[in-house]
Length: 152
Ligand SMILES: [Zn+2]
Image (tube, rainbow, N blue to C red; front, side):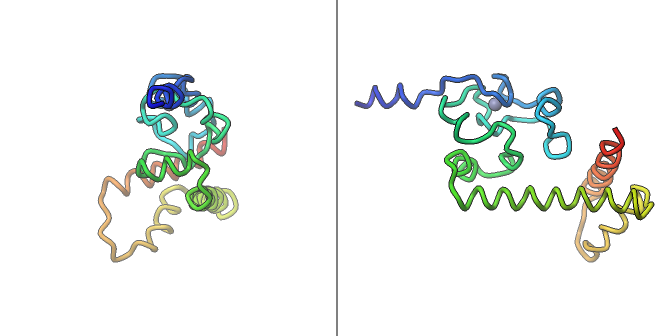
């Protein structure tokens, strides 16, 4: 019986997110239209294996935005298993990102603020926090990316 279950659990299908490479690159990100959600890196859909169990593709969509490597392995497994709580938490996280993107677009197009002004606006929230320069650069670049992406 052990052998049988091993065969059944063996990953078979090529990972549709990274196309079997084990890592997601900009081509994959563009193909799945996740330019504002993902960065290149180890593939969270197959945990860098390049292959997935064939039933996973029917269980969880390949472009599920919130299935990313910044989650723990356990949390990713729960999402892949369609666990209600983990899925809801993920959807909420994604919703927060969507709202942020909409806010940045609004501040830029209606509010006529440039990326630096939008950056300053959000930084008010973090006053008193110890924020690294690296984080600030990444954050400003992300705002710029949202605005540029919007105009394409
Ligand atoms: Zn993959």
